[in-house]
Image 1 (cartoon, rainbow, N blue to C red):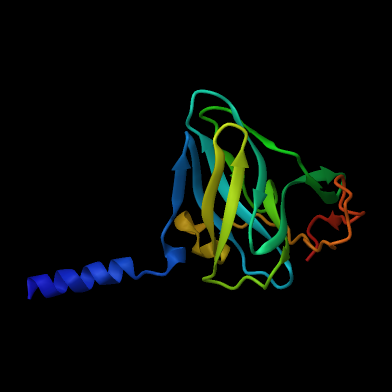
Image 2 (image 1 turned 90 degrees about the vertical axis):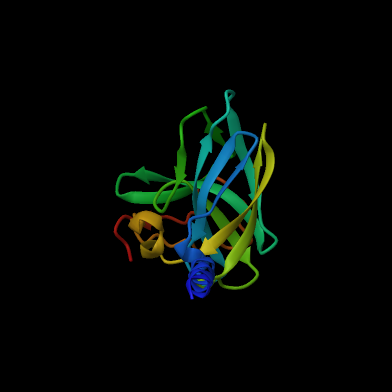
Length: 183
């Protein structure tokens, strides 16, 4: 009876929904903690994670890609008065021992031209490219912020991440800007 109970318990633990289990990756001194994204409504979304350089030398995130998106760009939010603008950045420096958070309302990986909307429970393949560590493949879990390990706090100010495929303006995404607190 004990073996059957243990087998059932083990099956239950390993059958938990993927969103309930934190997933981390480590390669060449770079640690990537819990890549996630919210369900999307349209063809764009944003991925969030924490990157920590556990090596002794500086590194830099320089690009990202996904077979499920036309392109992936590194973005940040800039506050200008009471306007919040998304800006593309060419890379993110990773000093040894200093974690960098990609979170709603700050740095994020903009998923542009998704092949299909992201639904809760989906998993999106993503490749991160670093100057020193090279490529690291991760899986981005589609989940609600409240389902994040530790309770997750969504600091998003309800910015509209609506991008058009014909824009190439890297400074302000063709004039798209958002007032703080806009819903």
